[in-house]
Amino acid sequence: MNRFDYVRATTAAEAVAAASAPGAAYLASGTNLLDLMKGGIVRPSRLVDVTRLPGLDRIEALADGSLRIGAMVGNADLAHDAEFAKAYPAIAEALLSGASAQLRNAATVSGNLLQRTRCGYFYDTASRCNKRAPGSGCDARGGDNRLHAILGWSEACIATHPSDFCVPLAAFDAVVEIEGRNGHREVALEALHRLPGDMPEQESALEPGDLIVAVRLPASARTFAAHSRYLKVRERNSYAFAVVSAAAGLVIDSGMIKQARVALGGVAAKPWRARAAEAQLEGSAAGPAAFSRAAQAALAEAKPSGDNAFKIELAQRLIVRALVSAAQGTSERIPALPASPFSSPAGALHV
Image (cartoon, rainbow, N blue to C red; front, side, top):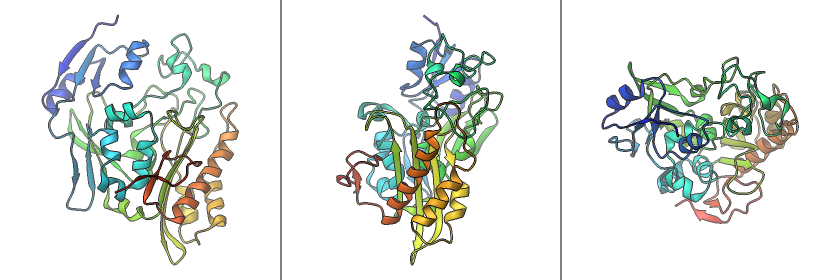
């Protein structure tokens, strides 16, 4: 049994001060943290409970047209908010494709952003893992690695980031609001997570004590509502993390693509914004030729990290499928199996 202190913070400043101590961790719903503690993967010396901090459970439309989502908003609450699902359908679909209904009811927005990799070697304390024990090595390099990274990996780590929610957030330029020891600051979601390099244990741009208080979607994210989709290939149709996922958003005028957003999940240690694909799409006619060029551009720098070369072609095919679906127009209904490429359009109404 690992002994730890428990602190229930009543203000953000109090939480930041308490969590700045070495070995401290924030506790929200704990859907990932408690599993890690039970398995002995992490051993925090202090848990700082932020579930009662005021104002973190709000969804607020701001005067500039952006949307501010408090860190303690539940995943299910956000996905089922009618106005949110209508304005940001790809993000709602991504949320509903993650985990089980019970976990979505408990999990929070900020916890989803900061969940740890699901690499089996990270979870096995008998295996070498540079994320868990820096400098020990990476047993995934020569092990069962068919689901590991094909972009941005290093010799030190080939793990992937597991979030569905983060993929469309990266695509649509979301911003993370942070309270820290030096006050308030903002970080683009795309810059929040780090690639492994030589220090895979440093997974994010957060500093000791930093507390995510909100995620903000800019007004521009709404412009993709009519043509956006999130698709996810997994080893079973529900309750599974992505082998590869793709978020796509288009602004189409008279058959021409005026703006494009593409991001991938399941391919790197962070949600992967495919800016090269976006550049290929913008100014092109919406159709298979442009979509194929974009998919090739998105994976141009990909390389296998073991037995996962198939993921490169799979990711290309999924990008094309997501772009085709987006170009056809956002359905009024979220599919019965959200984000599945094999699901029929019938399902729950957005509104």
